[in-house]
Length: 412
Image (cartoon, rainbow, N blue to C red; front, top):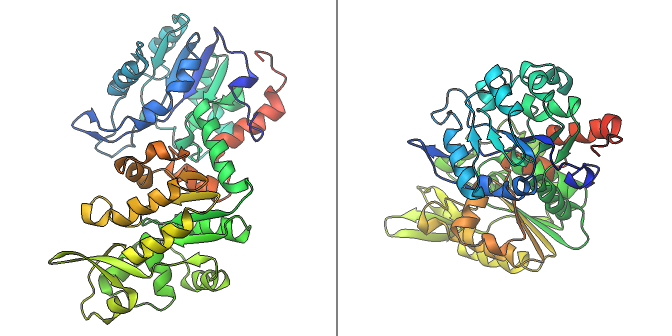
């Protein structure tokens, strides 16, 4: 058990029929999968289940998107990474799919079709209602165990994530176990903690910031990116029409008055940039906030400035725990990757380093720092929710039904 969640250590699964939810949602261009990071993250759990009859459930994109497609290429990638055949079945719970499942032998692996091809997957329903859906009711009777290894999708209460633990013994896989361990360490371990929050999703950073400040978790919160610009605006800094519009477009209903009160209440623990990296005809220019405010025509802010990088880095690397979520600027442009990459380096030098999912994990890999971090999360929205102190529906249902229904089950 880990934090009340049952793991593979709590069940005997050898030779059993196991249904496992994974998250291999990936960027796809012209039918080619561009990033296999999530695929690789599931390899340890799949390999541990090597003598089971293993059926995998996953999604790719969502209806209406260009990359909403079947999982045939995904099966090919998994086969290559595992050096084992992963059979793709282009259906979910048809008689053909069920027959394939029933004919499996120990060691076989099947990947069923994109669960989001099934219209009821994303409906807003309770776990108990999802358990009565066609997909869950038809598939569950053919399995001994359900495993959730899809941490990055576990903040969603979708049928394939919350329905099965109601009707099947369910545990978390090794990837989910690893995520819970690392993120719990970031929130609960002893020692001094720093959180570095950036990117454009202001509301995400605010959720984390409230949790770690109000509960005394973080000694300091360092703000970068658009979220830093928002709080600079609230403190009276004039950013210019273009930058202020970017902030307004990303506020997502936040109350300026409430956020200003938050800033004032924790002004000694919230650290803001002192300069910016901006674009000029000669390339990158670093300007102090005072210099920037004196400009008649204020250019787009694309990075934190070098003095901010120096100040933040010197402090962050001295913490026992450092957590970073969201880039400091437009790291996709070489001139403006400096802030993001240097702050990531500082985080890597802390006692225990955690990188959130999404863009900041891509930045860490691009900077060649992934091996120097203690943990890089696979989940953007899921890691934000966890660090915000919120529950993940797909994990909570496992805990609930294990305690109420399955803890005595001796598969087991």
